[in-house]
Structures are given as C-alpha cells and as structure tokens.
Amino acid sequence: MSKSDIHKVVLAYSGGLDTSVIVPWLREKYDCEVICFTADVGQGEELAGLEEKAVASGASKLVQVDLREEFARDFLFPMLQSGAVYEHKYLLGTAIARPLIAKWQAATAVQEGADALAHGCTGKGNDQVRFELTYKALAPKLKVIAPWREWEIRSREDALEYAELKNIPVSATTRSIYSRDRNLWHFSHEGGPLEDPAKEPEESPFQWTASPEDAPDQPQMVEIGFRQGVPSSVDGEELGPSALIEKLNTLGARHGIGRVDMVENRLVGLKSRGVYETPGGTILSVAHQDLESICLDRDMLHFKELIALRYAELIYYGKWFTPLRHALGTFIAESQETLTGWVRVKLYKGSAAAVARSSPYSLYREDLATFGADDVYDQRDAKGFIDLFGLQMKVRALTEQDPSTSPELAVQRD
Image: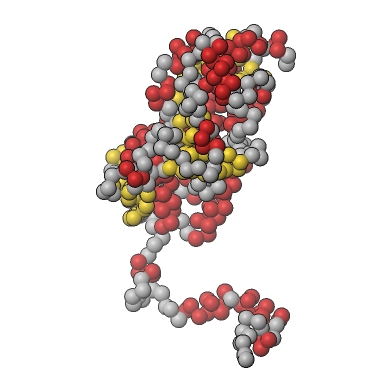
C-alpha cells in the first residue's frame, strides 16, 4: 500500500509528547484524515481535555472507550492468577495493557473504515512489538505506520522542538523529560536521569506512592477475599474488578508499597532501566501467592511456577492473542477452582507481607503438620520412604565407587 492509498488513519493517542506531534506529522506526510483513539485503562486525570487537544492538533475527532472493567477482569486478573512476573520484579503493567488498547484501536479502525493504524512507540522499545503483534492477530490487512521508524525526529528534545514549531502544547519539558505510562495497575517512569543505572532515583519521578521513609509509622492490615482465584473483596466489602484495584492502590500508595527500580532486558535486545509503582498489584500478588500456598498441592504449585515464567514472557513480548497464551490461560483457570478464601496482608513502610490466610479448600492439616503427638502420621513410616526415595543414589554409589576411597568420606591424616 502506497502513501496515496492511505486516506484515513486511526492513531493510538495518549496526549503525551510523542502522539501529540504525530497528529500533524501524519497529516503532512500522508495527507490523510487522522482519528485519535484513546483507551481509558485507568489514567485518571490525564484524560481530561484530551478531545480538545487532539482536535487542536489536527485530528478530525477523538474516539475514547472506557476499558477499565475489561482491563481488570479479562487481562489483569488472569495475569494475577498466572503468577507472571518478568525478571523477578516487573509486574507487567505496561505490557499487559497494550494488547487491549491495540484490540480496540483496530476495532475502531474497522468501524471507521480506516486504511491504516498508527502508534507512537519508538523503534528501540517493546511497545512497537506489542501493538503490532496485536494488529497482525486481529486486523492483518490494515497498514501500520510507526512514525519513530520514519521521521527525522531522533530524541524527545527533537520532539519538543517540533511541538513548539507546530504550537502544540505538551506537558514534557527538557527539565522533566521522563517517559511515563499510567494505568489501573501501575505507573512507570523511564528516560531522563533514570538512564544512568548507577544513580539512585530521586523522589521526583514518583507520582503515586509515598516514600517508604515518609509512610505511616503504624502498619495497616488489609484483608483480601478471593473466589476461584479472582479478588472479590477488601476488608469484607465486595467490589468490582477496577474498584477493588483502585482501593488497594490508595491503601498501598499511602504505605509506599510497590516501588521497583530495575534494569530489564527488552525484547529488541537492549537493556533499559525502569522505575515502576504498582501498589495495588503488589498487594494482590502477595495475597494471591499466599492463598495458593494452602490451596494447591505441591505438584500443581511447582508446575505453575514454570508456567508463570513462560506466561510472563508471552505478555512482555506482546503475544497475548496467541494459541499458546490461550492454552496456558485455560490451564491456569483450571488451577484456580479451589482458590477461594481470604488473606490478611500487613502494609508497612514499603513492605506488604501476608500474615494470615484461610480457605475452606485448604490442604493444610494441623493434625498432620504438628510437632506434637498425633494419631495420623506414623513417623516410623519415614524410614521406608527415605529408603525408596534415595534408592537410586545408593545404587549409583554401589556401582560407581568404592566407599572406602570416596573423596567425600576421605579423612585428612598427618
């Protein structure tokens, strides 16, 4: 498809620096109508005045869709159930939102009769992959325009100059030049001073959570209720998916919960430093993992840990709409059938720790686990178990070595 074939483009629009300058650039470069698409996935006040800003930048209109409930119900909670964490730290706040945004952007493009989809992702980042893999899975015939891979702008400073040239108001400045992403699950910060991993982050990037040092001096208990692995209540109050996350965000942020500073491996091969705030998600992850400890047997729990690693990679790589992700999701949902109960979490100066838990499906038996006298577990049975469990080790030792010459049994003599 040539440029002359493109008459209408739907742009994934946040109102930030990149997408603000893309609107006039698309009109100039492709001589096309630009429709801005915005997904409300929990950005809050960032959405205020977005339509006026988009139109002032040259867009014909803004299509905004409230996706908070779908985001929490169909993306965040299944990810929570999986236990997915990327490289031990990242709770995948940005990565998990991209397939949902791209899905509805593509649906809008089809509805509007557009010829192409556009996004503001850089050629060095992960998001370009996440958006475009979703386009390929759901709208493979639409042209994709990625301005960062085409235009002469090479830095955020260049983008700021372009915005000034076109009289486009943006919130970013050369002094505050962080690249941020906010949604219901997290707040991320990259770029600027954070690009030097040898320097501790200042307080200025953090927008959501209190510093642990400034958090309340008294801990706070919060009780999370679950039904089949899905969070359903906070302190006994039944809440819908997005409202539940929002409430835990407020509680967690007050106590400095969920701050992460990490250098991660991007999909494109580069390393990058990111600072993340995930207060409610951190509390939920701690509670969910703890409830699994009493409701899942050893084989299921350990196998789920293997699945979680792969599931996290699929989300990070933008492969949400793939057969493997769907199949793993089916397995994970099956594993959650008995995950009903509650977990009490203590919040204190940046720490979220599970301190109590209960479930009608708990596999923990005090009469079996006790160190006191019991009539259920005969400790003499342990000898036979150990003999059989260690039989292959004994056979190997008898076959391969003479115990009298074993270096493990050698005694140093003068």
